[in-house]
Image 1 (cartoon, one colour):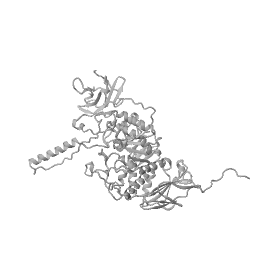
Image 2 (tube, rainbow, N blue to C red):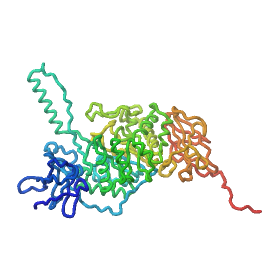
Image 3 (cartoon, helix red, strand yellow):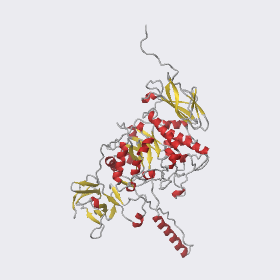
Length: 633
């Protein structure tokens, strides 16, 4: 059938279905020769695999070309654009054809052109709605779609896929996760082009045979590198931002599987946040269109933006994204000064990580800085707190390695952060010594408590809840193997630690005073009898706090968060026992330990080395309740 063409609508970039045709809209100057190249999935009678449909120069508004094609069957075709003889993948394509198999090196050998695919299928969202988890209730969990379930140590059926995450929802609920952050899961090219360091060599003293031999060796090396390219496992870099990654699908419908995942997460009360990387050259308007697409078509709840400030400024001003949670390393000043009815901005950077690691590992730590990070909060903007993230050591490796071990990355150790503020507890790497293993576990517990009991939003890197290790690699960007995958065998091996993490998260849920989204004033501004937050050292209510101190207690007045109990968290970062003063509880109550290994001795709390202990006020059984009612005359 011969297609009929008319001028397009210009209303939406990419492809859109009209009543009687398909509309293609893309960027192109009127002076440029433009065409839509249609690929046939079945062999044509003339043996050609494609045909070009020229776009008349008059089909142009500004620098936008638009054409409507009638008689085209999207199920049988793919497409690209031809602009002045150059073939271009549609930057707005909802599906990418040619990357269905992860890291398929045959693409390098064949030179097959990646194509734009049609994504026009309807999806029944039913009664799906954004959970809109409150800031004080959020617990984030960052994962790599492929690496989260790829390892053989789990019972997931569809390993390394969107469907595999859907199978893991019950596990996320068990842990207490409210918000899942996906590392780049839009389309990107995972096969990295080899980079050559061209060196100027003086061949004047070489024989012709030596020169020829050297050049042949260099050529052979390059051919080998082309056949075995390195892998961009994490996916950071320019991408085809409108399409879910095809190789992350268990079947052939990546868009449908991603929508099913989001719908299932929402049904379980879990949000879906996506990580997006935009480089310095990206058009802010395009970035806004990308994020709008994922909100409207995939019901995504928020975005972690790794992008220049001009892109972030454009995104936070968009009214359609006003209720989408937006995470970034920093925000422009106007964001801090604006009082949005629905606060949706979150600072996401390493500030908490460095402060906590330095104190826990005794590397120029500062107790005052630590507690400032613990209570860091803002009326309008939230803070994400973590002590390990994908760009660095896992939590277990923070206490198992002093130095990074990135040899497998092939960059001679030049990659990865050199400032890890980590310790190895006496042995670099794996150890079977019971004392070392116990110390590492205790440090992980203390670090996890620091994250969970901080006032901001806690973030856990997938696998850190049971001691996942990357063998000391702090930049596993190219490790699509057991180094980069979550090792689920560690969950059984470290079962006791895993239960501790669940207990810590349960305590956070149970006691809103810890996680208040209001900044602490350190005074009793509502006259509840206690300050909203107070600190206690060797003496209650008195004594200065010094940066070099190693132990301190933090008391929370529950009434400021609507709960009946007050709380006290005792922290000891020293490798010796510590004694902290307990403030006298209100009349008729007493302190009781609910978590940790501390001991109450009168009006003091005795803490073991590297200990964290949580106490709450409970009724004192020795105090008789006061009688109420009228007395008899």
